[in-house]
Length: 207
Image 1 (cartoon, rainbow, N blue to C red):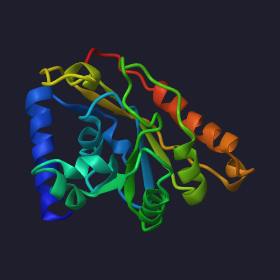
Image 2 (cartoon, rainbow, N blue to C red):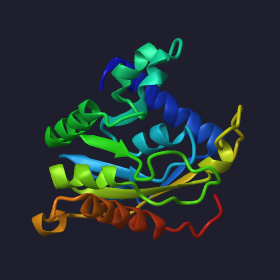
Image 3 (cartoon, rainbow, N blue to C red):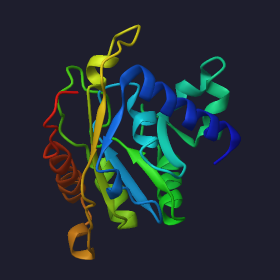
Image 4 (spheres, one colour):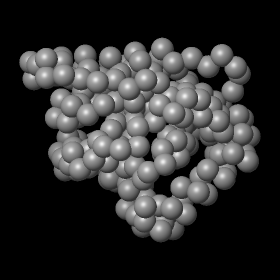
């Protein structure tokens, strides 16, 4: 971890624990070595750090490039392992960076839905995740965050002290047979398989 990442990591854990009584269910399922996709539902700005602190190693994140223009935090994002992406077009540079990071044995947080849900419900998966799976054949760890949509929903200006819980699922593994033929339909199918695994994760207690 870089110094900036290390500070942000522990600060995020402190804030999550004190303000949101954050809990991770099945932390033993986290894979700490080798290339990995942490596939997470997306309802809040809090989702990236909440997913990242589930792992003991530094992981990488995608963020729209305009966030790097934020005062104070923006210049620090590269040291927080943020990979900028142009969401207005096909950003091949970001895609190549993600694939390279995974092949180098790193973990990357990705949101199959692409954007934050407007009402907290799960959305259909986009094919981008499937494309990355096809290019890396790395394991995918489905994760579902409960409570973040209420703590800091889309459009909110300030967070609320609502309990947040993340459930980690069993890893998904893919074979050469799964990624053929190379087509958008195949990539969509792979992405939706991951999204279905996220949707199957349940929280028996109230967050």
